[in-house]
Each structure stands twice: as C-alpha cells, then as structure tokens.
Image: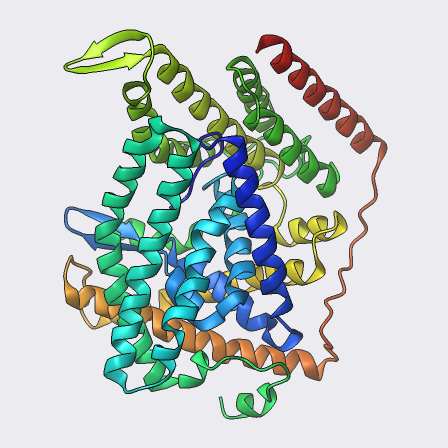
Length: 213
Length: 262
C-alpha cells in the first residue's frame, strides 16, 4: 500500500518524515559490515515480492511481506524497506518522493513491531507454534500497515475517513493471504536454515558458515 | 494474468532512454536529484490549484526533454492513476461544502472537487518529475549521487547491495517458478497456492542469504573491510549550473505564484 504525493496534509508528511528518520538512525546502527549483504538481500526480496501477484478470488493481490522482512531483520528492516520504497518511487513511480517518510513508517513500523511481538515465538518452540506465530506475524503486519495508512488519511482530514475505512476493508483479504504465506515461509525456513531468525551478533563467524554452502 | 505474472519481476530496471543521450542525461546526477526533489516539494506543498497545474506542465516538458519511452511512461502513470482513482472519485462526495452536482443521493462539493483535482495533479507531477530526472540514471549512479549529497554511507551501501541483488533475486524467483510450473503448479485462489507461494518465498530467502554469505566471504577475500569506496567523477559543469539556476528560479517563481494565488 503506497500513499501518493499530494494526498496527505503537510503536518502528516512532516511527522512521517521525522519518524522515518528516527527509525533509520536506529536501524542503521544495527547494521555492521557483515550484515550488509543480508540487509540488501531482504530489501531486494521485498521489492521483488511486491511485483508478485497472487490470485485472490476474481482479482489478485501483490505481496507485501513486511512481516517476514521484520522477522528476519528486526530494526534493520527500516533501512531495508526504506531503500526498496525509494527505488520503487524513483524507478517505477509507485508512491511519491515527499511521502517517502510516511510510506516508510507505514511499511517498516509494522515490520519492527512484528519482530518484537512474534520474533521470540518464531525462534523458539516446535514447528507448529512457529507456524502459528509466523501466521500471526503475517496477519498483524498487514493489519498494522492498513491501520497506519488509515490513520495517516484520517489525520489529514475528515473527508478522508470513508477512504480510510475502505483501506481497512480492502486489506482484510490481503491479511489472510499474507498470514498463510508467512506461516508457510517460516515453517520452511525453520526446517532448512533456522539460523536465519537468530538475532545477528556483530562479528558473528559468517565465513565459517559459508564454507559449507 | 499468467503473462503478467511471469513478467512481473523484470520491470524494476527503470526507463531506457531512447536514442542514448537526451538533454537530461548529460546533466550531473546530483543536480538532477536535487531538482527532482526540489520541484516535487514546491508542487506538493502548494496550497492552490494553479501551482500543481503548472508543475504538471513542467513535468510533462521534462519528460519530453528526457525522451522517455512513451508507452512505458504512460503505463507507469496509469498505474499510479488507477491507484488513486478511488480516493479521487470519493473525495468530492465526502467533503462538505457547496454542492455542485448530484449523483443519485450523493452530492459533490466544490471544495471536494478542488481537493481531488489537487491530489491528481500533484501525484502525477511528482511521478513524472522522478521518471524524467531520476529514472533515467542507473540505480548505482543514483546511489553515488545520494552519497555525494550527504545521505549516510551505510544507507547508500544498503541501496547499492539492494540494486546488486534485485537481479539475482529476480532470476532466482523465475527459476523457482519455472520449477513449480514444470510440476504443473497453477496459481489459483486457494490455500494450496498460498502455501506454495510461502514455500517459494521462504526458499527464495534461504537461497539468497546463502548466496549473500558467499558473496561476503568472497568480498572479504578481496580486502573488504566494511567500506564501499565510491569511485566516480562527478563534477558540476557549466550546463549543470545553468540547469540548477533555471530550476531554482522556476521553483522560486512557483512559490511566489502560490503565495499570490492563495
């Protein structure tokens, strides 16, 4: 869900930019040189995922996957998602330039929250509970994204309240799809490479792992 | 539907410029970034309708000067317009004010119409500005320009890695999809499809991260210590000064126009 330029009032745009800048500052501090390729990969995955359309009823939805990105990256998801949004708006024209801050908050905020909320559940416990927590992460991230968009619209003016409600309603099916999808992705990752969800320690021995690949 | 699915991952590369060089592409990337953001800001934060309308005209002129591929540009703009269509159509009926016309029980207000028009003008102007000035440079060049303009080095590095991996991931995605297709998978609206896509994304992540770690190891072998050295020769030429001056004067003119008009 991208908000375009011109739709939001100036205070909303400025608050969004300030929040995004704060999030970026925190996120960038979590990225050391060893993690850089990982963050770039996840950012690129988010970008590519948004071009994947999944059939849903008579229509189709494109994936957002901010929940999954959050689960893997934590706070580092903010720079990753910001970069993907920047590239999308510059090269594809999705979203806008002035609303980049708001769009970052709308997409990356839920990613970080989901990481804090569902991260432990996904890491610990059996595959079944990990799948459930993954599903929750998928649903909640989209729900929060829709709520943030609706709030940004509603804060802009009362005239946008019906549009905000429409945004919330339109995201319900997306929540369903992303929930199932994220749960499945979590199950697979847990089975194939569970280290992906481990909180990255600065200076972790990346090289030794790489030898076996 | 299937055709769009298969082509979905290829459209990230941005706009090819027809004929190689255009008036815009000889300019310094930093100047283009600054002008794109500056003019967008003036248009977006304008109060009246006049400045967004003039801005859209300028953006169209910029697209013309940039000699963008016309069909691709129209397609991108239409995507954005479809996106805002619902909101723009709803707005006149949800804004209280002087009634202009009625559709059934709904009344459209003049204020709402004006607001909807402003959104449509602004959104299109910004998209065209960024397509004309920025999408015409390589993504890596954009990264360098942003670094030279003072964006944190780490953030630029994330951008450069992302750009590098977009193609890798896109190719990996297509490979996995081809493997699914070979096993007669057809996306439908059911649980099986969504779960399969979940596995697809999970596998994409696992493979990509394995690859990222191998790349990191290879980079370390070649002396990577955590800094990407940006090697470029960006120097402002006389044409850039002229371009920046012209754009600055235009922006100032638009701000004055907005203040006078409002």
